Length: 479
Image (cartoon, rainbow, N blue to C red; front, side, top):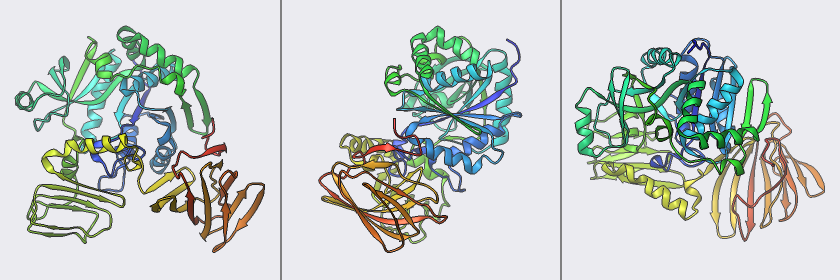
């Protein structure tokens, strides 16, 4: 295989992060969480990708359509060199094989061939220099035609990770998530590594292996890309995959689809300070200072601990008082509270699953929800009424829309609002208001240079966020 100089970071930004509920939610998953320094895991992955090798000019991201605007805003804050960003937008998750197949197909079409560095956007890596050295080794192996995975030297008998038996750069076999006893055995041997889920390969070789081991998946993803909705702007490309076509794509991980079957796989053993933060116990080990009793308190200096040992407390604003307890995880958000035994934090996922089955929006949304035009915060939610604080960015506008089941009162708190209400258009200043009856087309816009803040009072038989019909939208949300 000829040397391939072009290297493109591919960020996989998805998953629900259900074990980190209630901070992580379906529309605010783990990649958007911050670990102490003001940068999200997603932003760290972006920076890591562009600094991993010389000559990076493009970043490719595979994410959910509902996370696009949030992802784009996160990147804009750290993309200081205005590198080209491309987004492949999935209507729902279909696992890593589909995501990697779409990235490889796109790269092959755009660049002819390229080295792809696949980075999960929810990992933390503390030793960036060691990571860059590992990427250099992986890139060399990829140019030799190998599909390279990064193997992490294990430090504890983790049962939540897959393992790789390695002989130098050669992969002997993959081992799925082991039992506790088996994990203890593996961690004592120098031949076994954690499977990090970080990969490096040429798009050409990956497509060959996909064709060999899962041709149906490759055909399904290719057909979906061919009918996708493509939008190009300055330094930004957007590929929106067809919901109907993507629904037919096989749901399988890249490990099962290719890595465990291919004879063309190599591993780069590395010690890069890697963390796949899969539970609140793991998060607690990374966040905050430990007091003399083994407690860590995050975000809340008002927390009071009396005769309390080995606890982790993550609270936004409310005063948390703990007396005579130990080995607990306490995570408090404005609309949900988690209390868990440190030894059972993997089971937090069960709470998330139950909430989702009950269609309780606490699994999906925070009290404050971010939209491309701004944000809204639910202040109170009662029977047949809901009160929101809405903030609209300067020069931004909500969609022209209508609700079947609810009416809305808008009261301007600060700024100026341009309102379309049925056939009428008006400007509202501070302390002025309007009423939007159910069934009326309406639109809210901020024509000014300062944020617009208003209070919205909804009333009606049904107040769900899905009671919305969009007629036009500045952000492409009308199909």
